[in-house]
Amino acid sequence: MSPSDKKSAGFTAEEQERAKELKAEERANKNRAEGERDLLSKIAEMPEPDRSMAARIHEIITASAPDLWPKTWYGMPAYARDGKVVCFFQPAAKFGARYATLGFNDSANLDEGNMWPTSFALKELTPAEEKQIAALVEKAAG
Image: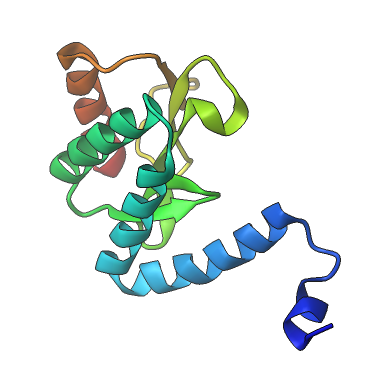
């Protein structure tokens, strides 16, 4: 058994993937281009229609909130400020769901009263949804 095999013994494939991703996140927090490269690579691996939807959402988010840094987060495209994920795209195929999800973490500025939505189901992107996403992301990043 090689030394690298000993290090990974006992870890699941998912845990090994997450460890690699944490190292990539650390690099992405220091280098925006590297984070975007990782994110675009993950999008390219997705099956359709997740791939097209994720690519379009990437375009919308980078145009609506250029100060958010693209990165991966648990294998999903995500966008962060000061290293904290503000929003993310969860492809439907990741968990065998019937819809993809656009989610927002607690660092998103979406607070409205005592209760507000933090995730949205996406089955298709039309100009109406794209407009809503742009407005949500602008508010979340604000």
